[in-house]
Length: 639
Image (cartoon, rainbow, N blue to C red):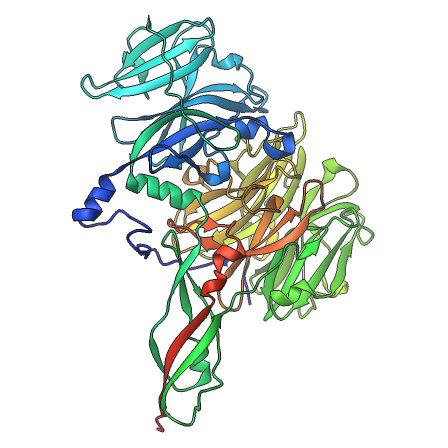
């Protein structure tokens, strides 16, 4: 029986790869060639982009910091699919609404403590001057150019808008030298010992004009800024995190000793990728030449087995969820074909069987007076021996959409509508509605240490529309529609990728590893701009403490991640019979096309974080799909 949270164990030992493919930091001193390569300096360039059409690459995406790297000092290669890695946070107004912001003219620099700094001009979302930022620039710090901390606005002068900025740390004086240009064309300079705490900063003084070194960059739409030197170790980790790995070789024992076909089928291959990560995959062995009654050595071949799911696997079905229950797999989704008026279920012996399985309706808007419209985002979860469906629905209007839970009756058949109880609206511990000043939707569950948590999207509409935010609370495992703690805010759509065309973060779903809990969320308008972001927390952390959670600066999956799939989002996770984790998601086969369901294996990167955009042809190299093995058949020992 499968529970409500997907878990997976990840081996965190150093990735394996050839020296020329990957150089990693090591816990022991490097020697000779390795030391020279580690000390080698590579160049990392920051840039923004020219905006395109809103559904392709809007200003909120273009006006963010992008990264590229070069090994030869001349030709720069884009990272992260030529998408931004650093976004300015929205400003919160006095009425709690968010005012989206963007950034221009980022400048990378080394900090005295070994970290990296970024200064940038904060703008309005469309790139126009931001009145709140007059005389100031945005300051960020980062340990690795992957995760950034926005420290806020650094005031340089009480004068005009700053239009350009640069900063260098001068080791001789142990001071940062900031130079900038104001909108009247004048240049100024200011020194400070600590750029993050400028209390001791000298007064600004006029200085000579500066220009950044021109760089010719053959990257679509790039507006290049400055480049800094980084160690090969830093650059290699950027490449590993911000590019898609490919399957480069296999690891398999040369010989195994077995006594039966069942033991042989348990022999699996370790696929190794260009970034040094690995994935264990099953093999279909051809044992036709083996005489199991005659001990000896046999040379056999096999084919690496991995289910392939052509996108789309289902059309007009969005927000998909697959779960295992009593040995069988079930699929539910939002039905766009009928305007979200029904929920149907598919059943099969395997995940692959769900692709062609028959659908059976289990809920429609004519069954219950309190659910007349907007049947959205059903999720199947096993909790305490019972099967539940979490879903959203409304008694009529958009403003009335609320989260509900319905339970499968004891001994019931998930494919029988009559075997499901009446959907119950989620409530607080005192029985009052979860939220009355707006809507709630996309509720999911997370189980840890015998405690049940629910996460959901909540959109306050009264007195102001605040957009959709992500909340968490503890729930009663015996009555999972009832909270037993107060809701806690985890995340707002404060980055440009999440408030692109609308302020939305929704669709949370948990994936647990031995060290981390990852919660993927979806943001932006539900069109080609839709994308997947991620929250994470240590597995032993207090989940109701928002300070324990980390939000990734940039999205995990976008329309630029996998060719031909636009607006990917609202994914869930499921584990197959082999223990492989699959992401179940929706995307569009073209701009303006319907939302469709898809499946893709979840890979885990060099940090053990989920990677959702590994295409099948890179996941399993067809040229490496055949493997060979010497099998030593041993006689059974009778006892």
